[in-house]
Each structure stands twice: as structure tokens, then as C-alpha cells.
Image (cartoon, rainbow over all chains, first blue to last red; front, side, top):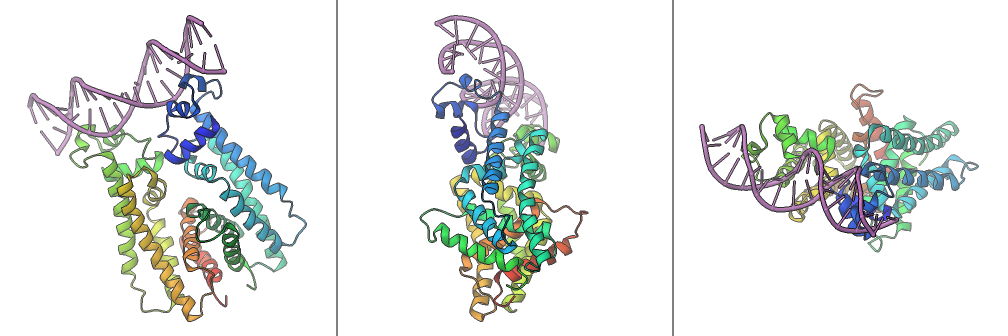
Length: 183
Length: 183
DNA sequence: GTCTATACCCCGATAGAC
DNA sequence: GTCTATCGGGGTATAGAC
């Protein structure tokens, strides 16, 4: 059911997808879905929370905290592009369906998103202190970098002009230069 | 009607907003709306097309073509942030509701969007030829810059920690460094 | 745990009076 | 040009049989 909902929500949007459509994709009747979710809202919320949990766990598992700021930023950049490229549906939903969450659910997802942003900001702050980065505002620089990297998902296609490796390298060049003290 | 639809679509999403809701906001009954639009789809399309037309017209009106590439890139950066900051609802809809356009309408909007992207790519190519920019791929650099700049709209609030002027300066610093040959 | 059936409500769009 | 009324359909969620 979660797989079906993920695919349908990302293609048509939460509001445009009915429980009947999800049930049809799963191969059951609509009523049967309510054995697995209390309602449609909770289904959306759990999809988004799982995605954010996976993101934070995978990021934590890279364990780059012993390195210098430049290496940590490169690891973050490549991790972000790689992770997001493997989960286009989840990423799309996580950004597009925020407004369809109840206020309480929205707060939870926002908190997880802020945790992720703060991880990048920590790297930028550390590099700023070390003198390897020079940005006027670490918070804004973090948002700018994340927006730039997440943008890859709007156009990247496996098998296109460039491989994901090449894309990673191009973006890392730009990210590095954009924040470096001596690019 | 267009104002009401704009506000409601951006807050709740095209699919989640009914013609009856729009009519209520306008202060008429639902049937009356059909004197102004043939259907809901056309209403969405016209909102998006107007927005893209305004964007391209305003961009053309800046008339920076006589300047060097660095000055043109700065003009583009500041124009993009300024223009988009004045129209949060339109920008949100233009990015979020693409999938709710019919295929024919989608092609029209995509064409306009590509025109805008190509405008930036032209600047980057010119600077690359002049040796003032150094990017591995002008197409991707253009997408990366636009994604970064458009991201401002997800967090910027008038009256917040930073003025729009300050935000423009911070982003211009990052954009300049990210593509410059000698930042 | 899945089914059928249904309660209750809203949808886009149109018809025809005024 | 706006209204009321309505067509035909689909929405979420639940009840109760199996």
C-alpha cells in the first residue's frame, strides 16, 4: 500500500489521488486499506516521516565527523545528490505535499528537515572558523546549497547526457567554489 | 476571480480547491465563474502563462545585453530574486502545479520556462568564452543557479532577520564565486 | 483481513429563469 | 451576467457479513 501510495501521490498529488485508486493499484477494495492506515492523512504523514528518518539515518551513517570541513562538505554534497537521486518519488512528495499535512504533522516533518539543514550549517560554521570557508551567513548558505543540490532531481535522468558521477562532480565544483575562502 | 484562484491554489493546491470555493472568495455563485473561464484547467493555465509572460517581459525590460558577462550575471541574479520575491503565490503555483496541466498546456509553459533558462545559459556561455567564468557545463550551471535563487522563496519573509537587499547580496556573492574563473 | 454496501458529502459543469 | 437547481459522478470512511 505504501509503495502504491508513493507512486500515485508523486505522479498526481495527494489531493488528486483517491483511496479507491490506491486500492486498485494494490489489488484490493478500498475498505481493506483501513486495516493498514487509520486514514489518508496518516498514510501521507508516514510516507514523509519514513523518508526523513531514512535521510537522517543514512546521513549519520556516513560518519564524516572526524574529517576537516572541506572533506565533510564534499561528503555532504555527494551524499545529498546520491541519496535523493535514488528516491525521486519520496523527495517530490516531501517537498510538494507539506501543505497537505495537518499542522501537528507538519511540525514533525519540519523539525526533521531542520535537523538535516543544521547538519550542513554545522559543517559550514566549522569551515568558517577554520578559515577554509568564507560565507556571509552560514544559515543562508546552507539553504542555498541544499536548494541547488535538490534541484538535480527536477531534471536528472539515468541514461541521459551525463552520469550521476559526473553530475556529482560538477555540483561539487560549484558548491566548493561558492563557499570557499580560496576557491 | 484570478486573484482568488491564485491565493487558493497556492495555499491548498489546484486539485484541492473547488470552483465553489473560488466563487465564495469572489462573492458569487459557482456558475457565474464560467462567464470568465471555460473551465478550471484553463483558469490554472492562464495564471501560469501570465506569470511566465510577466517574467520574460520583465527580464527583457532590464536590457543588460550591452554589458559584460559578469555584470549581466549580477543583473540576472538580482532580478530573479527581486521578481520572485514579489510574487510568491505565482512562483509556488508555477513550480507545483505543472503536473496538473494537460499535456498541451504543459508544453507551452515548459517552453516559456526553457526560454528563461536559456537566457541565463547565454550569459554563462558568454562569460565562459571571455574567460571570466569557468564552469564545466553551462546548461547544468544555469539550472543550479536558478534552483539556488528560487529557493529564496521557500524561506524569505519580509521583516525577518535580513532585508531583501541583504539577501540579494549574499546570493550574488555565492553565485559569482560558484561560476567565476577567478573568484 | 477482505469483501459488499452504504452513509454522507462534495465535485465540475450546465440549463434555464430572471 | 448572475442566480438556483440539478446532472452524473466520485470522495472518505464505516458497518457488518464472511
